[in-house]
Length: 168
Image (cartoon, rainbow, N blue to C red; front, side, top):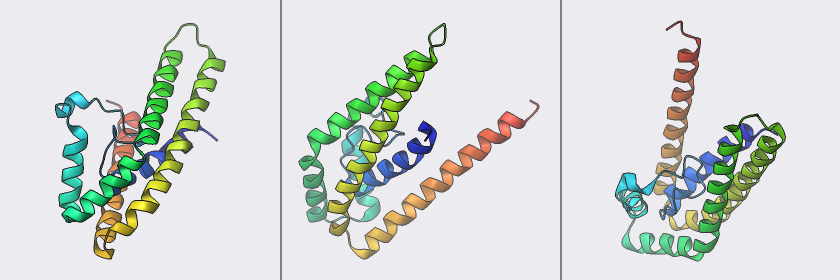
């Protein structure tokens, strides 16, 4: 199985997990993660949690309970985020070396794939704990957020394909 086939589900899962759970340990396992925190003045996780909580209309009790779920998994989240970051960096370095070392690239790709799988599993466990905290209406809002996120991702892919095929 290719890294790209593993990466997309893991990234989507991670994004959903963060929306449900709120505490964004570096956008958790979310692929689209590892965004530098300096873009958000170093407070990206609290700001993101607050934004998601507002969009879902979470009560103070729900916020506290979801944050407690995340804190209970803090060590796992941090370890997984570091593993993904390190695997991504190693893969990037291997891909940029001359001469090309295909075996190294494949090895680091597998490490990254393994990290994505671990992230998806962690997401599933956290989601299973956090989702029951939400009301059915909030759960529906969450499904709609995810659907819109997937649509935007598909639009970006179509845009890339069009650009690659264009003459310009």
